[in-house]
Length: 178
Image (cartoon, rainbow, N blue to C red):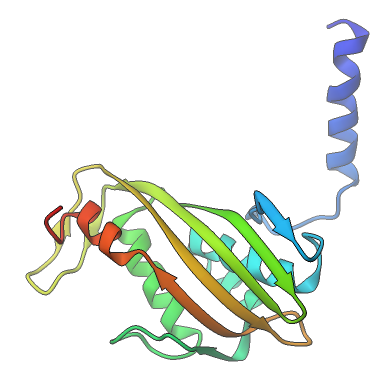
């Protein structure tokens, strides 16, 4: 390669080598961020939690959530505390194994962070319904969620208020008619 082409590649590699080691799971970067740097402890907690939803890795949920984590908009049947998101993630990843979660917007204000999350993937697994397990046929999954987190002094999410577009999701899964 000519030297002008190699220079950006060498620079990128040197920056990667100099970057601090992170967990094996990539923390999503917000497409739009206001109010803080992406490395601010409030923003980092939100990015870790988004990485948990994408990967299903319980270690990321434990890093992101406080020991006294409270889901302030707890869906019926979901356990309070860490157990709730872990169970919901297991169910969702069983249905959509290639789940991707993008942080479209993030707004940090003090100890609060608001996110608009974009969930995509293919329904190739199994989703539980009251009528029995539903097998995916490769349907595209594409929906949004809005979350508001309160982050404690230790940089972990203590409270979560959330609203997902479950109507769109259930239609895409085939649980509800379009």
